[in-house]
Image 1 (cartoon, chains in turn green, purple):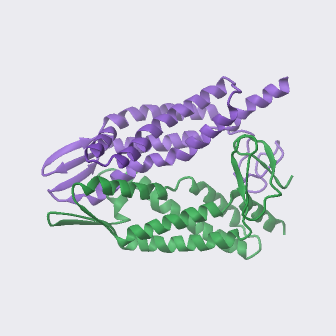
Image 2 (spheres, chains in turn purple, cyan):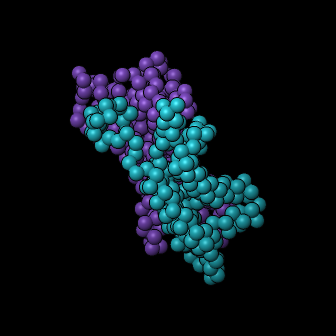
Image 3 (cartoon, one colour):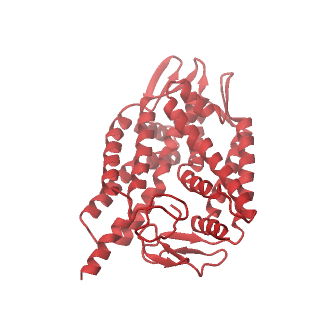
Amino acid sequence: MGNEIACQSCDLLVNVAATKHGESASCPRCGCFLTRCYDDTTRRVLAYSSAGLMFLVFASSYSFLSLSKSGVESNITLLQTPAALWSYGMPEVGALVAAFIIVIPATVLAMMAALCILINQGRYHSWLVPLAKGIFLGQQWSMVEVFIIAVIVAMVKIAAMATVVIGISFWAYAAFTVCFTLAVSSLDRYQCWERIEALRAQ
Amino acid sequence: MCLKMAPADVHQCPRCGSAMHLRKSDSIQRTLALLITACLLYIPANLYPVMYTDSLGSAEGTTIMGGVVLLINLGSAPVALVIFIFSVMVPSAKLMAMFYLVWSVQQQSSLDLRKRSTLYRITEFVGKWSMVDIFVVTILVALVQLGGILMIKPGIAALLFAGVVIITMIAAENFDSRLIWDNMEEKNSAN
């Protein structure tokens, strides 16, 4: 029973014991992705998530975009972006945007790094379960890659009206997006929980 | 939650401690309720402006569709297409797809099971991409503040549209795709 997964999409029981390093398994009945196996998951995820967090620090400390027209200039940082909505009387939207593009992704990355450090220590810790739950819940609600597309669209929209200059923070945020995506796709839900249970059983 | 399998009479997961159900509880009712809410919000979200462009004292509101038309007039058709797909086609197609899935489960249909499963996974995956337009408005509002020359202010539809996107995401989350397959298994065991 230990090696079987009930497919999340159609509830078919699938045995995934034969999945080796670098291979992935999907459901034979409905085609839904089941699991991907890496032997060095924790090292990969730790590397990507710590790199991602560093890029996010860079991304929030310098100019993100700047705009100029007839001698007047306006400059924004990453954190000022959602804050502007707040000052226009839309605190709800501002808070949502801040959560989706900064707060949730940063929290997920920090939790991933913490989880990997704890797993690497090789013994069970009572934080492992809440950390893993938080990670898999937060993943669905982070929209970093959507934000990158939105920045590009916004630049095209205003390019006709004024001159836009991309700041160094934008590139840092793009690198953060890459690290975030790699970290999320490297941490497999099934393998992660199996690992936690193996540690608990010791 | 953690993909652990446990006997059906256990109500709390032995691995992660979450409450356990064989199927998500009241899946169809919750999904339908959220879908109807999203539909109602969707109407004003398209009628009211998402943002106001204030250029040299004359303010002008743009709706979501208006923004697409504006982009085509500016000569950036690819970007207009991106916005059209994510803010017009995806939300409406998603609402229709979810209504269809709920309806087909209610009808106990056992046709195209695999296709319907794929349809559900696509709707689930594509959901958050509709936020693109909200993020664009956010960036524009923050960036375009050039005093009297050019200002952009957010409109009420930004809030409404964000509501539509989030509510449809929660609706997709609440729908239990295993219900699609349950009908087939019931019919097989009846034969």
